[in-house]
Image (cartoon, rainbow, N blue to C red; front, side, top):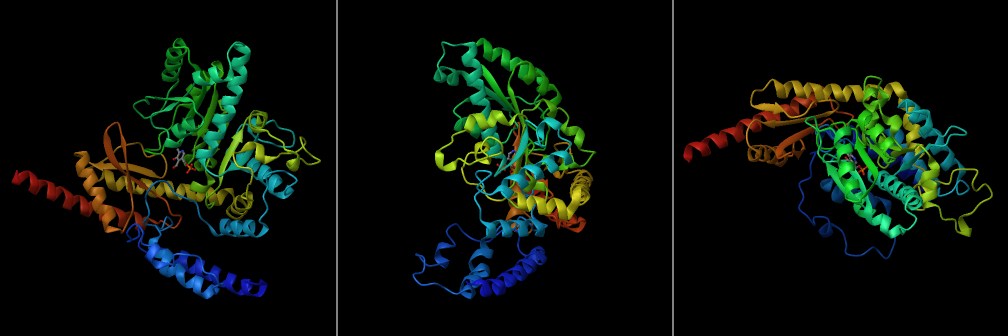
Length: 483
Ligand SMILES: Cc1ncc(COP(=O)(O)O)c(C=O)c1O
């Protein structure tokens, strides 16, 4: 593909994408394929001779689209949303064209500098405390990680390194290995699995603490666990609090956890992967109160802020904590401004990094803060509409407070009944939902995901659920009568 051909085919691709986005409403949200479907549709080996773009393009509809789950269909209500917008796509396109690897300032100064400045913009939108902003002389700053899972792992590794140093001064006879074997971190029983996984990868103990009635981790529970574990000779060092948990969008009590972490000298990491985007709206910002106690904070603009995956924003109170933990400087990576500028390779696990801030920058500029606030409010409004429909039907119950764009609900009755309902809903492939379970109770999660979801799509989903509920209940009644 030469320049002229790219101009032609690239424009056609843009038309294809616009048609795809415009028509996504009419595609089945969930694919109708069996595992291994794709292998049979393409050759066993790569072609020896180049193929034409026309041949490649023809396979997009033939091979790929039948096997895609359309996360941006207005009938997709599973998991949490993933962001998507034309400005972000253009940012990714340009990032691909520039194709730099921004591991150090010198490896592409704009890649580093835009990221730092745009994360300051975003931090200000969230009203993060000043200490998290890089500014021109701050000690903190932001970085774009690939995912919230990486952000948690990076925070854990930095906290572990800091804790080992601290305990070595307190217990000079202990080796690094001895200390590591006694470190313990805490999170709630509602935290995302990536938190426990980070503990596995970081080879530290993780204790999942019981959340309260409203599914929040509280200060007294953490305090009691610390006392117990210290008495056993363990060394608490790290706490992950969640704002907007995955099962039910619950919020840990940061204002209680923060002072405990401060007093006990433990690193506090806040995971707000989904809910974080909403904090740009003043009415949701109080849910972030207590972040002033955190050492690191993370949320995913790639979830709910119209930025295409991957773009996970992380801020660190004292960037030296992270840089000191991961700093290795082989000669081939050194440059003249070393030490004076940010070298993002020290803030992350891989060396290489893409120019991800472009898409974030484009989105922030082209939606503006007001445009982004509007879409958050619209989606929360749609979730509330769904909640009203559920509450108006006696057969159902809402199982968690609806704070943002997620409604957790179930048929009054057994878990099996609700499993059957979900099976029917998803087998119909008209809408797509996933379940969750808290303390033995199975429920369905209705998340407002696509930016194109409208009120009509909410009632469409509810009509399907409500009708299938009738069938499932009828089936149960007939079975009861037969027994
Ligand atoms: C609260 C929370 N934390 C972490 C994650 C993991 O996100 P990522 O895929 O960015 O690692 C999720 C995913 O939904 C989440 O809800």
